Length: 181
Image (cartoon, rainbow, N blue to C red):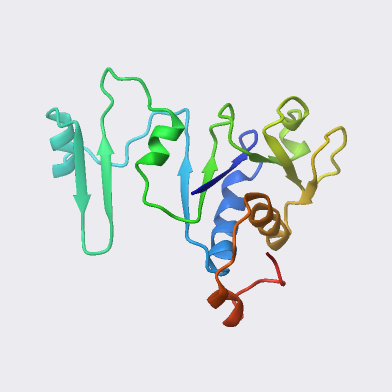
């Protein structure tokens, strides 16, 4: 599986870009999964629900399942947060895993940059950032700078950088966006 990340300061537009990239890439016939890292404590469960009560009672893992999806929650309790690579190993195989966050991990990343956020470029000091996507002019980086609003071009870059092959049936059915890959 290929792994490619989106990083940037809070408010830069990482999530917005990611949710626009997913349909662009899947329309090209690629299977895409995502992983998001957060520094905040979060809970996808609700107090009073059975699955919450299972976890609160001490279950290490709780799987919640329906006819349309399943989710597996693992409680770390006193264990350390797993490494990104350990988490990826638990995911089903796909063509591409897009990572939002995990800035310090050594995988290839694209920085989403907006000058209005008021913080400097991460790419200036991080050689794992292989491109910058921005609505603003960007100077002082050795990597390509892409238009944040040109989602097909951003997708083209990721597909090319990761060496992904677009399935032949995607090309034949006209699912390709503007002749990419």
